[in-house]
Image (cartoon, rainbow, N blue to C red; front, side):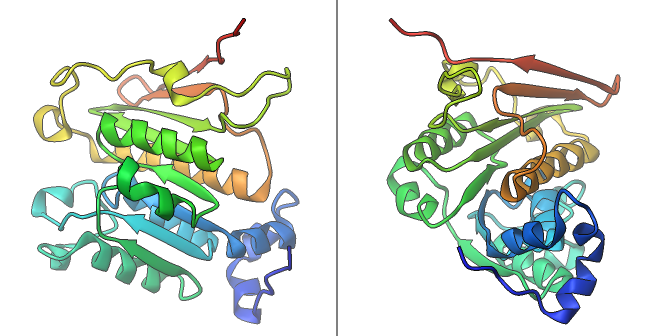
Length: 254
């Protein structure tokens, strides 16, 4: 793959990345070439999009069909008071442009599902799911597995959140296929079992922590560094400031 040249102002902008041996010039060029789709421009999507833009991800697709409301602003830091009533896609595009003019935002004004998502997912190298419902999470997991596209998926509730990376089409070091989303969550909980943020509340910083962690996993995947959370389910509780990890695997067959 051809290298994406970095302009002089980009070399200065990303200087603190480039001096990291794990990133370097090659990693920064990979970030510039990358096409990342973010599902949701809300609580999780806000820090995800902001940090991807600051990191120099060249193309950020954003899927969202909502408008900014006043109750969003306590956690959705991508948007400001003046954005209330605006499309979140328009507000997000303006925020990204203000952070980094080298980043292209591609808006997708819809809720992705199995019917609408196939062609869209095919246009990206990596997907980050910051949606707020199980239907979208399962759909994105299925779409990304079919497209053989890495998926970073995060969720939050009140003071806690979780995160994992899915590459179920690939084989792990043990020779077994990596696990998929249904190996972690075989079935969605019954309707009404998990209250929404509107019903249960959400600490704004919870979305900031989990969204930032999701962005870091995406950057690791793009740059080919570190150990992504494949087969590892990270749980963060901000009330106790406890971080735990569960390892999960694909069941053996035959």
